[in-house]
Amino acid sequence: MYDGVGLVWQTPTLLSPLVSGLSGLESIKISMGVDGQLLDEPITAERGYSLDISDTTVQISIPFNAAGGYRKSFVMGNMYHEVYVVHLYYEQIFLDDCGVETRLRLHRPMNTPLLIQHLSIINQTVLEDRVFTVYLGNLYYDVDLVAVTVNGHNFTILEATKSGLVITMVPQPNSNLHAYILRLPFEDAAVHKLYSPEGLLQFSMDINYTLVILPQEEPFYYLASVVAQFNDVFPPVFKGVCNEKSISFQMDHKPFDYLWEVGVGPYILTTNLAAKRGYIMQNDSKSLTLEVPLFSVGYTYKDINLKQFYGSFEIHSRLPKTLEVKSSLVKACLFQTTEVIVCSTEGVVTVVTDVTLAIPGAEPNGTFLLDSTCRPQETDDTRALFSFGLHTCGTRVQVDHQHVTYENEINVEYTSQSVNAPVKTRDTASVIIVRCVYPLSDLYKLFAYWRFDADSPGVGTILTRVPVKTFQPTFPPTTRRPLTSTTTSNTGLSPGREMPGINPRAKYVKVFSWQMNQPKGTT
Image (cartoon, rainbow, N blue to C red; front, side, top):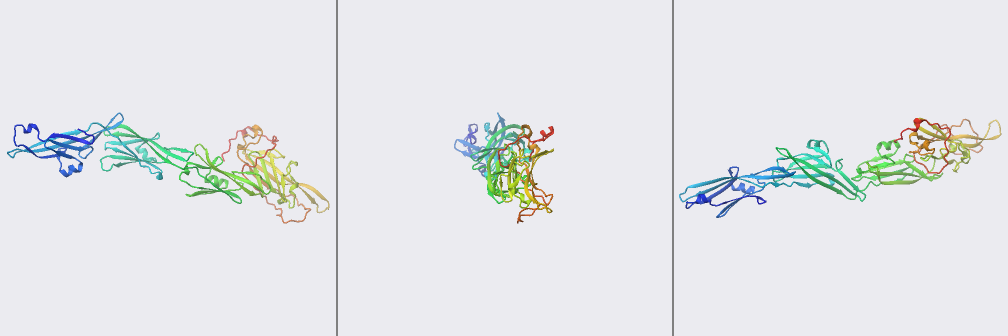
């Protein structure tokens, strides 16, 4: 019989048929073994067998799964069953009064009832390793693992070895059982990830093991779920520092930074993007640093005057799939104004330029645009500040296959005197060209609604013209830089100051149907 621990067999010490009609018969030795072989006492003791002899009863006990027996597996109702079988060999020697020995030998098959075998699942995952390690044990030699399903992703054992999933068969200590160890990194695409704004990060796997009983290859399935959880996991945090002509950002790396991507506007920050835009980026195992020179793409500006202005730059971390921003830093810095041009997405150009580079000693307060009523908002001894809508102040527009170019001129009044005549005359010269260039694909609303609406800021340029004749200033020489024959420029790629403006329709702009359907830009 099976008592829940092992197999037990009992028999009388003296069997009735043997002792009937005989006198002086006694039992002198009882031995046991398995499979027709008697075993010495040290071996039976090592295997855990017990032989208890009393005056009336002999009891033999063999523990479940002890050596000398074997287990047989079955599947019933997708449940793993097994039976433990031992072929007991029993010998008893009797001696009668005449000294004659009688040997009694029995072959007794013993087996347990059909038992449900509970597999063991142990989550051996070490969080610091960031790899799931799951132990499936209590499998006998006639049970094989043939496939696994992880969160709906199916793998055969052969396929698993070619992916990030590692499955290893190992012997189970102190038994003839075996086990399987499954390893899968947290970062694998098959692993489910759940993040909450409270800083809780959870990785989970639902595993469906497919096992078969040999040799009939009868399948059954075993389900298990494992979870790994981290606390205090938050998106990357940036620090911003103002420099004389740039803004610097720094982010210290943390173990789960890979869950987010760093972005500038709608674009992910990469080494290619940084190189293309002139950013200075360094990224190592400890930190990411980014220096953004003034007037680089991504800046916004406000409160521009002749002395100073604010430049702001935003960097953020977001989820790669949804692009949802989880943390951001907008760093605003105060910069000193020298020469500035900003072509905004709202169609306003703001420019600060030194007019004395074209005509030494020229008076900035005497400057104006193509529309002479458009005068500077501010001036000092050498510079003038203009801010005007791109459809105002006589601005010219030119459209080609890829770009829309807006151009205006800063004119200056000056007093000249001919070398051959002492009469002084007052003339006007166009000395500076202000130009903004926008990708045509970004101005998809411009001609549909007759208002300016760009996806990205334009490229601004200040061009100092070479004078066509020599002017004789009426003022004494100064220490300012002399007029040269070279062209100077200052370019900014950034959304500019938001300023209300009157934006009438541009004149003499012809746009063809192919230009209306240009795709939007991606850079």
